[in-house]
Image (cartoon, rainbow, N blue to C red; front, side, top):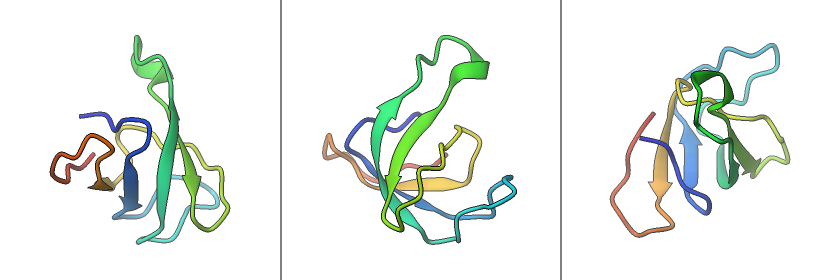
Length: 75
């Protein structure tokens, strides 16, 4: 399930990135890729630590607060 703009997300595992975010880092989703192809399924997040690292659907995360008010979900 993809997160929505405004959702709060938390990293729950090690990211496959040369400079990954620490586990437990939280941020707010501020944009979504077009999701019409697996290659462009990107999630823009304003991370609380100031990072602008893009999240991908297979990255380990959970939604800790849904902008729509639903219960937490994970990726």
